[in-house]
Length: 557
Image (tube, rainbow, N blue to C red; front, side, top):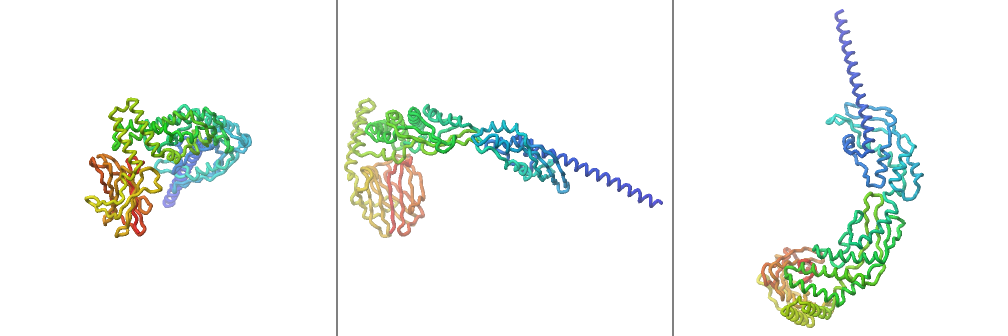
């Protein structure tokens, strides 16, 4: 009897314990289910309200939130916000694996009606949003959603893949094809304002920031001196003002309100370049340069001289714009109407003056150069900017310049015999100089050498009055180019040397002259050899890399 009571007691205890354990587990699962429901509904609410902090908390591994700048971003989010949970058919929780699966039915907005109401034309985003709130059609969607338990924070999260499954319900909805954040009327207003604003010098607007390189048509934009930048803007203001005053029309050539051609009339680029290459401007240019040279050392302050020259060039061209005859003008421009912020872009050149034609216009004959330079000197003396002493010196220099230009043989060595420098023996043999028929400017001289014992020969180019001669030395250490100048360089002068082997750029180095009166230079490209028919080209430039001082070409045969 005692045994029977003992067994009954044990069974009773086991039964009670079992009931407690069972009810405890059911209670836990019931709590889990409620949390999972809450997470699901919080996800929809947070996504629809843009609460990214909550999304980060409840979506395992995070979720890419829709960008309101995208075409349907705001509309998409609003429709998500109107989604409702209809029913949880079941929620299966596995606490051991800390995972759960739920079969969920959602009521989702049906946008078929929306598409029919708004039609095929341009539809503004704000109109779509107004219509959304009047929609009554819903459809049911059932999804299997997966969840994971975040043990560190003690909470359930919806898995990223399931969050994306919910959002995928909306990706196939029909939206108006021409949804826009901007109206055709707004686009027309913006396009009409472009040259109006530019003509006032207003180059930076909320909807457009002009790239200043686009208006630097007479230089390469490398000079960041404020005077050059301001003068370039003054020219652009005058140029665009000419276009605006002559009338601008909008041509919808691309079947779009937001992508158009602006057409009108601009000052003739041919007339502008004719002025640039004429005596009036060339003389003015020389006055500017000669005045600048009086204030700056040409050897060490070259950039300052160039800046003053280019600033005056832009100023002179701005003054002439109004006097120019017209040429037809077209510029393509557009912006993306699906983005909130308008950012106008251009295709083509805003100021269509080709760089090669600017370069061609800057090349003048020796006679014109000397004629205009003489007139500039006379003008400076007449205005009192030159003293008698400065005038006499300038005229003396000009006479020497005339000698060098008219008779480049003044610096032409028919049989060059240069032993080389203290460190390197010149290996060039039978060097002669001549004036080539193809010379592109007055005073250009070509030097050539015969083939040495190792199969090397040399060519070099020089301008009369600058480089005297060139040479080379080939050794185990590499290739050395030797240069001897007529005019010495001052200490601190910065030069740039470029090397290329077989037509491929190999090195570019900056070199600073150490001592006043330096007229002989050695430039070394170490560890370099030429194969048969190989070539090595060396060029020496000024600090701005826009004026070549010497070119030497070595060939091995």
